[in-house]
Length: 323
Image 1 (cartoon, rainbow, N blue to C red):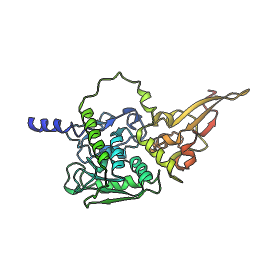
Image 2 (cartoon, helix red, strand yellow; image 1 turned 180 degrees about the horizontal axis):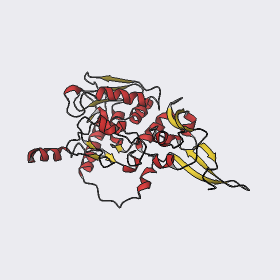
Image 3 (spheres, one colour; image 1 turned 120 degrees about the vertical axis):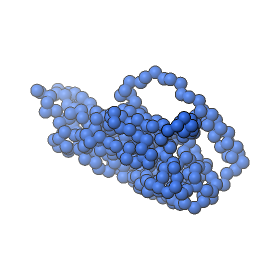
Image 4 (cartoon, one colour; image 1 turned 90 degrees about the vertical axis):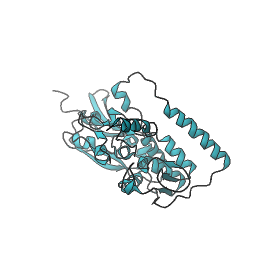
């Protein structure tokens, strides 16, 4: 690649940033059995390298299509979801990609739409309309975008079963926008664009584990959608008899959904308890694959479990406690 191509690639990065990567939420870095290569497999431009057991993104090859952010089971790859939500709000549930004709708000690529974004928007605006251009010839996301978007819709139905989405290649009509909304959107967009061009200030390094503690925006959107739904099909884990209360499941969990606590029983001895924050569970299956006695399985949670207190999965005395 020549100097000119490098300069063009660097310039394009001003408007097409790579996804933000949170290593502690990556199943590779969590040493999950079987690992994970979903982001690499879905990337249409071979921009992701996993050779060092972490995610390295080639900033020149990456086109910001967003496909990797939608499939990442640990939500380790993310684009800012706020601007996408705002555009769906202005469009009253209508949105188009940057290559699609028509009116209304647009995003760089519809591949950036995650299950949580779709579920929350569907719970607020009803049926959604998404317009895409000629994906077969597009250099951003490529021909796989409609299929992957359909997958994201089906995933979104786990959190809001009433989700309805029309995916079309026709021109998007766009929602009617008043003068006040138009100028507000114009000035708001200018402020965001200016802020995005300013480089981030260096921040002090956070402790590695603390980066898992905060609920990712994607999970917060899924929970909002579940709150508006009458029932959900949220994935969660269940633990059967035979659990040794080892810390493997808590160690591989990318979002700290599973916690192991020591509970002192008055007048007796100490027990260990496995608890699950259902709204933090992504259904990634890392604990299922990594569990030494293989007693963990994926099931569906109820709406009450998602919105309620952490569930007690298992309680007992570890077999290694008296060794």
